[in-house]
Amino acid sequence: MPAVELFLAAELEVGEIRRVELAGRTDIAVYHLDGEWFATDDLCTHGEASLADGEVDGDEIVCPFHLGRFNIRSGEASMSPCAVALKTYLVWIERGIVCVDIDG
Image 1: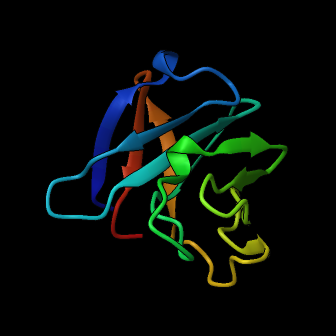
Image 2: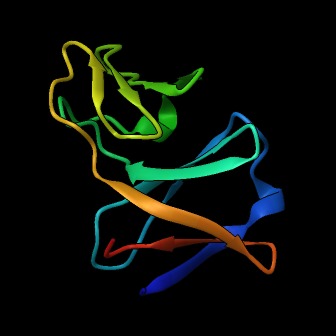
C-alpha cells in the first residue's frame, strides 16, 4: 500500500477539514470525525469548489458552492445539485501522523 504521510494528527481537531496538496495529483480533503479519519478528493464533483472550505454537518460535507452534500465516509452524493460521488481514500494514524493510501 503506497502510504503518504500528511501531517501530525494533533494538528486537526475533531470536526475540522484540511486540504492537502499532493504533487502531481488532485488535492484531497482530510476529515477528523469523532476520532475517525477520512479523506476524499477535495474538488466538488458538481462545481469548482474546495470541499475543505465547506462545512461538516454530521457525516456530511456541505459544498460551499451550491450547498450540495456528500457523505464523508462513503463519498456518495447525498443532496443535489451534487450527483457524482467523490473518490475516497483509506486513512490511518501511524506514530501520530495522518497517513493516506493515495492509490487505494
